[in-house]
Image (cartoon, rainbow, N blue to C red; front, side, top):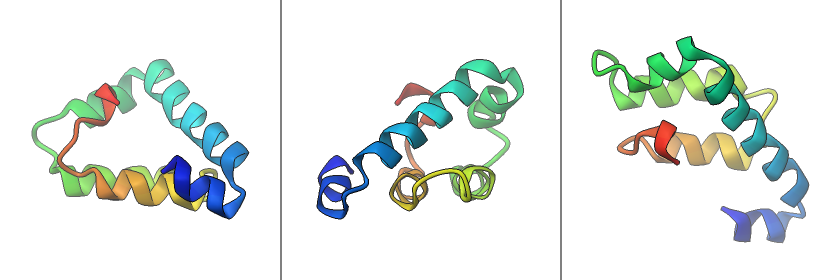
Length: 76
């Protein structure tokens, strides 16, 4: 992800976007519970995360979140 960011000159935007996602995970018990829920598929979680952060996150981070559907986002 960072290699792509460097090639596109988006290092700062990617760093800020990752910080936003991380702070939301830490600051919102509801968001964290949503991501840990076994009743919601990983595909649904990824789609929701992209919709929630899509306009505030760099496209590289949004696409990365969509690609890691089989990974628990709270452990990244």
